[in-house]
Image (cartoon, rainbow, N blue to C red; front, side):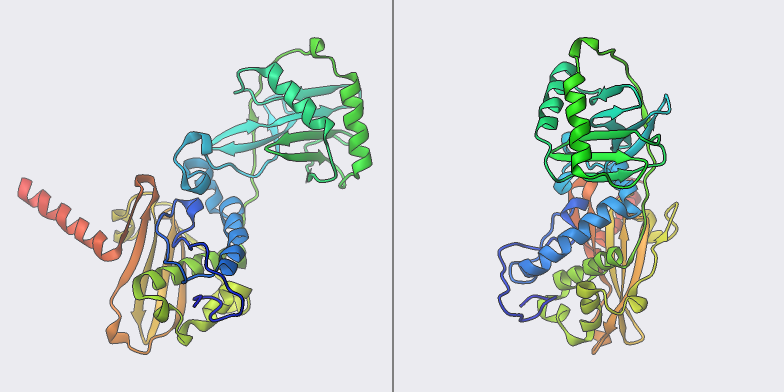
Length: 350
């Protein structure tokens, strides 16, 4: 039975749900049959929004992890591609990875000329340019449009990266015939021997924000931890039906949606003891209710009331920690044991 969709019709269970999203470095998964493929698919786009467009996207761009939680620099997480400014004040299509800006292959058509740019970290610029020209020849109907006031009126920038075309202007979204005309004109007049090589650095600004859909992923983490620690039957209890419904549909957002509390520096003792960039979730009972505190990067905190507790005496403080930088995950009790052992070792050495 799916803890989110219940005993719904035609549910499948081929995949497993990560307790903390894999894109944030989570390794521990719930068992098969706990979360359906249909729920998993629904959460995928929501998690992508969390990692690319929420406030934690900055932490992920700066520190990682990369794709599917990888620590490999080649798979470092990237920001969404947008319009940045070079040190000569010219607009350029670029992204950020591990705190550094990178441009993509592109051409910028000005009034009477066009400039071409390829990633400066590429060893063979000529090969990169030829690859970009070939990609332009196959421009189709789909592209991502970016509008920026930094682009002079009448100019157009066309870029290509990882199978996606990007078009940026100062005005409204141009139609395909106009873009193809610009590309054909650029290809017709392009001469490799006329290139003048130079290097510039780009600076970017990123628009990051929070909304109820992002908050629902925090709550989903709490329900996942509840299922991991207390079992599927416990997490599926009717007492928690309202927040599960909100996670799936977004209904009752005024009851559960709150902006995250952001800690510039660890304030609570527990935050000071937890690894610096770890993610964690603590389950707390009190006044007949079960609350959850979910914290990402040991900085962005959301609190939820999951529902009423039928047996408060039978619920002890519990939780789970994802120390993604050190590829370790452990329960709250294991965390307490580690602290106690370290304290004991220090006393013994003294």
